[in-house]
Each structure stands twice: as structure tokens, then as C-alpha cells.
Image 1 (cartoon, rainbow, N blue to C red):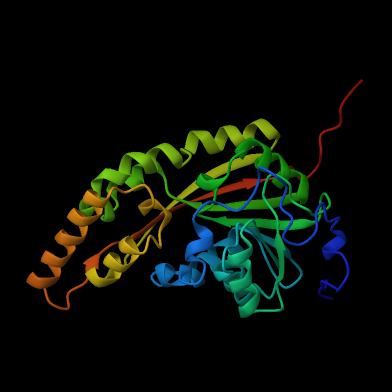
Image 2: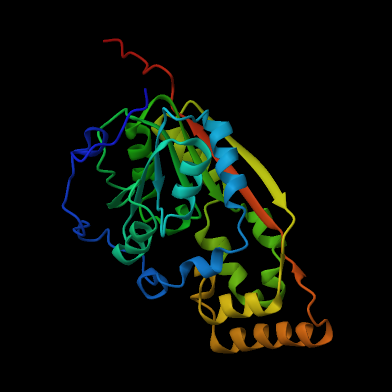
Length: 283
């Protein structure tokens, strides 16, 4: 029998604050309010169904599972996982404008305006926490790791979709916009960072799985993403750096009409598992 999220507290959630009352200092990630309505346009090339299936495989999800999408944004991956597994889904995001877009897509998912540093869900109930391209935006990563461990059931899995530093250095987008690479290397956690976050709080195992999915994008799509800042990596770019990159893309477009640029979806999944049993403390 599938566990259903009812109209009351979600899965026994004890809400720590009301809707749209994210605690002071832990508010919406800067910049996402402005692009909420256009956010999905920058994600058209992502293999959502593939990542949903990989998450289901790695976390052993089924129709009985309870899953949280941490930093769900407009709900792209929460809905993808729900379609692929029939799991009961909850999406959490600090930006109310992003959640408004998610809510418009589905009433079947429970959407929470909250932050990873204070997940308003009681301890030990989640089978999986999924998070896509979020951890480089989190202020307190150690605190969020601890919160994830707390909310997961014994044996539950945390699956993070991110980009390793090695993969960042190979991304085609930085061929056209090289000045933003150094900033991305600063803000993205390294694999060693992830090992430290999760190892220090008590996860039993941590693995890194590297992927490269062949993908092609038209220069016009990359230009739109850059000019509208639909990927957060473009927020710190200078006007000169943006103009140079767009000019290079337009030259490619003029010289190769209708030909897309190969821009593979290079991703690392970081998978951390909570111990099946909490070690007893001898006194």
C-alpha cells in the first residue's frame, strides 16, 4: 500500500516556519527571483528522465518511497522522479517565485518554501534526498549535510547531481566564456569537499559516479542562456566577457549555418548512504 501524503503535516512534518517565511539569513538564492519564469528555458537540453532513472536505481526507489528534491527550483527533477517511480515526492526551495512555477505544474507534489540548513521534516522518514546543481549555492554545506542525515531513514540515500572540477575544466561553454571558469571552480565543491561534508556527519559510504551524455546545442540557444543569465554561472560575467563570447558564437553560427555545437552533459553523481543502524554509544 502506497504511503500517501495527506492534507495535514507532510509525512509527519513539523513545520518550523509558515509558507514564505524562510528564516532570516537563509533566504532565496540571489538572482533566481528574476529568472523564475524563464528558468526552464535554460534546462531544455538536460536528460531529466535519465537522471531520474539513475536516481531510482541508485536509491532503490519504487512506489512506496518517500523522496525529497532539495533545491527543487521549478520542479523539473521532482516531477521527473515522480513519473519514473510513482514515489511520493516533496520539493523544497527557498525561492517563492521558483516554487510558484513548480506548483503550477503539479498539485501531486508537496512543495515547501524552506532551506537545506533547516529541513522542516521530522527525522528518519525519507528514503532518498535528491539534489541537482544546488550545493554550490548552499551557504552552510556542513549543516545541510547534517540535516540530510537526520531526515533520511536508516539506509536511505542522498543523491547529488553536480559537476566535478575536472568536468568543469572540459566544458565547452568555457571555450566561449573563459573568464567565468575560475569563479565556477571557486564555488563548486570538489569531490574531496563532498567526502568531508558527508563523512564528518556520519554517512556510511560516499561514492562519485562520473557521466558524459552526448548532447548538442545550437549557438542561438547558448547565446540566449548567456544573455538572459539562465545559468547561474553567467551572473558574474563582465559585459566585455559576455560580448566576446556571444560574438564567437555568432561567428560559429555564420560559418556553420544550422549546425549545433557539441556540448556534452558532463555530470558527477555523489551518492552518500546513511548507516542502516545507528551505532550505539557505550558509556
